[in-house]
Image (tube, rainbow, N blue to C red; front, side):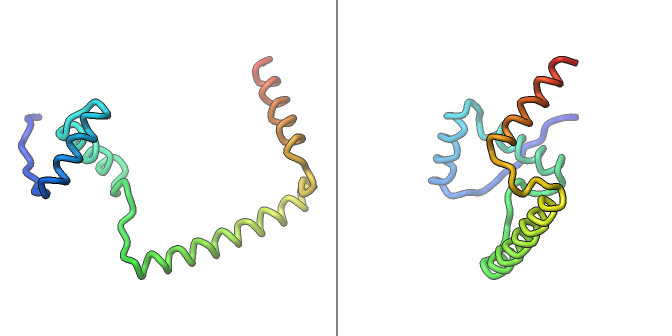
Length: 105
């Protein structure tokens, strides 16, 4: 498939700063925009959130509530599992034992 030109209008300072950024990470603006477009097409979404301030505050409040619910559910499950009193050292030891077991297979 052949290449086509895409024209984007931005203010001069933004273009200069973006060009400098691209140069610092070893690419040019064309490569950066190609990466952006491919990421959008691959995920079918923009690679960053776009919200207005009002909905952002509502989202944050809802996320805080969901986080509280998830935390309480995890606490309840840890009591059921008998892991509510486990220490970080015990967790680390279990992880290390599992890794050693996997290596021995």
